[in-house]
Image (tube, rainbow, N blue to C red; front, top):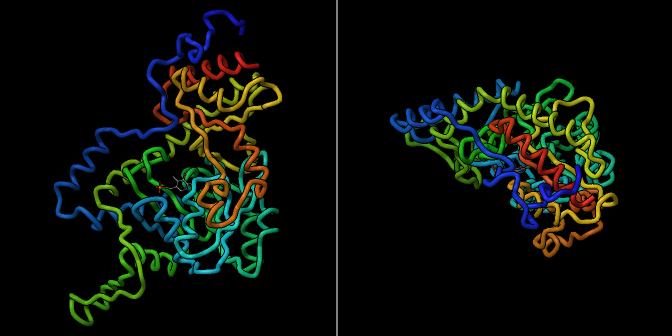
Amino acid sequence: MKKTSKNKLAISGGTPIRNLQLPYGRQWLDDEDINAVVNVLKSDWLTTGPKVAEFERSFAETIGAKEAVTVSNGTAALHAAMYALGIGPGDEVIVSPMTFTASANCILYQGGIPVFADVDAKTLLIDPEQVKSKITSRTKAIIAVDYAGQPCDYDALNDIARSHNIHLVDDACHALGGYYKNKPVGSLADLNTFSLHPVKHITSGEGGVITTDNFPFAEKMRMFRSHGITSNPRQRELSDSWFYEMVDLGYNYRLTDFQCALAMNQLKKLSGWVKRRQEIAKRYDIAFSSIPEIAPLCLRKDVSHAYHLYVIRLNPEKMHTDRATIFKALRAEGIGVNVHYIPVHLHPFYQQKLGTKRGMCPAAEKAYEEIISIPIYPKMNEIDVNDVIKAVQKVICAFS
Ligand SMILES: *Cc1c(COP(=O)(O)O)cnc(C)c1O
């Protein structure tokens, strides 16, 4: 591209590619979704009624898992998973630093100790060799994160978990609809957690789901999401209908019926939406393959990537600027870029309370300086996709 006045960056007073900013992700609701919610609002049950059970069954079926347990959000799903595994004070849980803080916070909720294992520099997925090196006699579990929507190396991770007699959790919040060796995400670890936040693959406003084949874990989490109260109907029959017992300290982490009605309708669209995300990713891959200053993350051969995020990585040696400037320039062009994520161990809370510091996970730290997430969501049309490509070409060209 020639450096003419037409290519003047918006950040320097040029004309932006878009006047209204394109977000990096957003929900897609239609009239059917709205009607599903309205019908529940007109019914007798607003919460914990038939729609919760119906959605849990459909979700489990879609994933190919035996059980699905709904909770109020993805963070509660992670907390419930830690509870089900019996994580408590002094227990260590190995987790990826390249994630949203909730993936590690859930360990702290239970009094456990997050231990960060660095990621593979090419994929930003937790590195099984690093996981191995962090295992001690106090390690109780591993939390893998399917960063951006690409499933981790589950054969390696399950081998490690099995050989040390510990559990594997998949924080699958990015990867609903993805596959690892033709097995759906949600069936890959002992417990698999999802978020139904509007930027995720399907939404219920706020919401979370845990899938598992382990029935006792599912029962524990159903109790945990409702104050630690058991309400075994048979027990109720045997005594009196008012009978229930609180057997452990739980929370109110329930999802409502009208949210489940929305999620239920959204679930029907999942496979089509994942296909559309993959199509957009392919367009980006092709368009950016001729720009040496940036590269997509590496794609593993044995997976189907669900593309919650499309992350580009800048090559700082080929540019005379930094990520912050590229970020600002893309925003000025009307492209709602983002950065996912500040490595968890670098947050002030973690540094102050847990003594984590720079240098502990060099691959994640280096990647953090170079990554930008560009818009990707099924409702994007061809004009939107082309605008993102044009803006990236324009900005990178100006700084190379
Ligand atoms: C979104 C997300 C969560 C938290 O989900 P909420 O529903 O917002 O609580 C946890 N982990 C990852 C990786 C996420 O992307």
